Image (tube, rainbow, N blue to C red):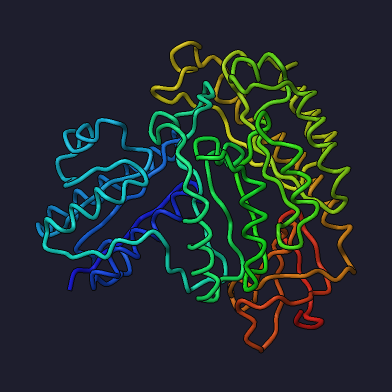
Length: 424
């Protein structure tokens, strides 16, 4: 029996695609290994959005090369954004890799398996059963070509899945016990523009809201230039769509936003946030920030700092700019912000956000919140509120996949803690 191990880093889309690959291999009678050392087949599902992620991929390939030298039977496959349109580049550069295929190219994996005499059952749904939450890709690729981003060059142009396929998958997942579905796309706000009749994300959310066994629906990631009032109103009126928006701003300075090719101004972004908060008083917002973009001055960084200070996000994901091959910024601009300056600016954003998140979460102390229980960590149950707050509690019962009410007693910038009141 072939034993496989899938190594995954990067975004939620990678995690969803890894689960689907595991389903294919499971359907062929393969068995999941505990790690590299006891696997016959290793699949690396990679990310190169940042140089640090690419370094991890390179380090892991080096490790596997050594393992393959010790065990000539080890098979190594590579997918994800490390693989560009010419997949042979990877196998030429790393001869220990037997196959490289584009992210989401399941047919390439199936074809390889069949060449090895491994019969795989083709299917479009995923069979996640270990968690009550599932990731469901709805659109692949990106057409935005932000100047710092490599994703369009690796994942290609936007291709939406038909509405009926998504509904069938989510219905099947709900029948298997999934209570929460998160719809995924590099830009979910573009969903449907390439389909007959041009259904949009709001239409899809409305359709999925009618699945009785499904308790919650989430979606990510949004693009500020494409988010619509129709979508905001749909979330506000839905009983099942969670009141949380992941809305990356990347910078708070208009010149930097223009150089990033983001397609909006800082003021336009503020207006979107104000619109969302007018429609949903309990909504939570998360965003992404890049510090040290080429040419970023201290004044321009100050505009980003002020935007975070004024808008008070629940979560801020911050990263230092690193040039990416193929992306326009690496060709057009010099990476001229010194690394110590990048690290200092990143630390200032993190410190600012820790204070803001701590204050926001402290307001929940003493309140009851609804939590979907996702599992256990170090003996404590954990789950998330509708607004995507991580909550821990202790109780001897079996609460996996249940909606429970937790009285919040402890808060921090990163999580909440409390005790069980009653299951919902």
